[in-house]
Length: 286
Image 1 (cartoon, rainbow, N blue to C red):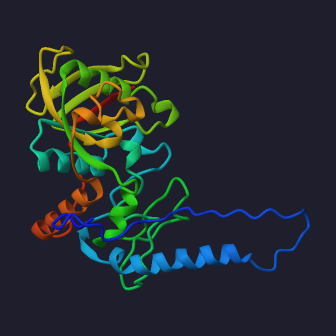
Image 2: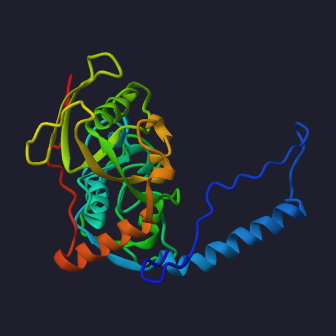
């Protein structure tokens, strides 16, 4: 999505897995014509998009971690999660922001995105990109492309803004920490506030404190409310966030991928290679 003109510049088609049923022992010497036609279309789309996804938008100082075993964005604060949440809060001047760790699908640069332009330097890995644990064996900085950001945020989500109460925020953080043992995607990446949670406590009551970024305690009460930036999936109740008020009570903003891509472009233009530190906004006990 081109944010300036609000027009789509490309789309992605992933994990196309056609099936072909044959009797056991039958040798398959060629694909049926329907498969060949589909394959031709997919390759054509990939060719059209490659020029866009090869475009370099900036650089990163080192690979921003993601996934692993356990997947860090589903268990801990991450630098990439901080950047995405901070970007949403800053763009719409909200009090707080929350995004689901499960919506962050790759490292940055993305280990599964391979530019068709071989001159674009990529990180080196100790094993196959899908293997876990992975380890980067090269050093940055690395160019950052459209394709990297599209691989990190592939679902086409929109950023939205709404309001929630202090009680809603407590319920949201308890929901977000309730299924870490299952590797659930609901674990929150946040901005504008801090929270502490204790994994040894019963799911649904693991959060022990929430404060705003300035240290002001957030009461578990409907007496206070906050403007919130999040994504359309979560505000509609996705990943168990049923305490959020729904799409009908939210304002849809920009494509989340576009928002983050343009923030990375601007940050890189300002500082050069972008880094992704954490700052302790999420504290995990036990």
